Structures are given as structure tokens and as C-alpha cells.
Length: 109
Image 1 (tube, helix red, strand yellow):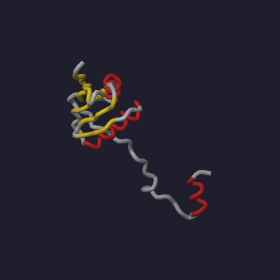
Image 2 (tube, one colour):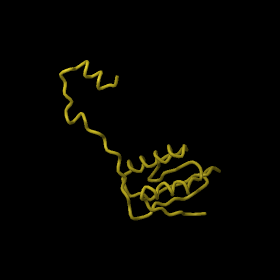
Image 3 (cartoon, rainbow, N blue to C red):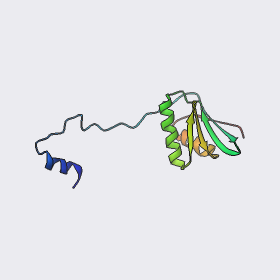
């Protein structure tokens, strides 16, 4: 028995309105003309992939950062308009961003 059936038993005369049936739309990211910069650095002796140059809102960039971190199973953070990903994942991240429609530019090494 699913939730709708349980609700029908509790409230037999209730009819769901159009507002209750609204399905949330997936988040749309701003696709920009300028390429996003993807570079590699060592900070405190540990490899870090840095992505910067996103022109959309910080919230969109945070959503993109979370998606990358969960997809590759890595840690990271978002600070000052930069996405910091632990480890050297430049090629994989660039491929993912290009599949999403972003232009990327590899900087260094």
C-alpha cells in the first residue's frame, strides 16, 4: 500500500489540488561562452584540482560542485568563486563539464 492509498483511507473526501501535484523541475545551470579554467596545484604537499571562471550564481556553482564530488566520490570545498577538489581529477572533471555543455580550458601541466 503506497502513501496515496493510505491518504485516501484517512481522508476519503479529499481531492488533491493542482498545487499539490507540482513536480519540481531539475536545476538548470547557466551555460557560458567563456571557458571554465581547470588547473592543478599542490597545497600543503597534497594535489588539488581547482575549477574557476563560472559566471553564473554561486548557488549554481555549488550545485555543480556537489554533483562532481558525489560523482567521483572525492572531497572538496567551494571558496571565493573557486571549486577545490581533492586529488588530480582534471581530465575526468573536464570530460564531465564538456558533456554538460561547458567549455573548459586546461591550465598547467
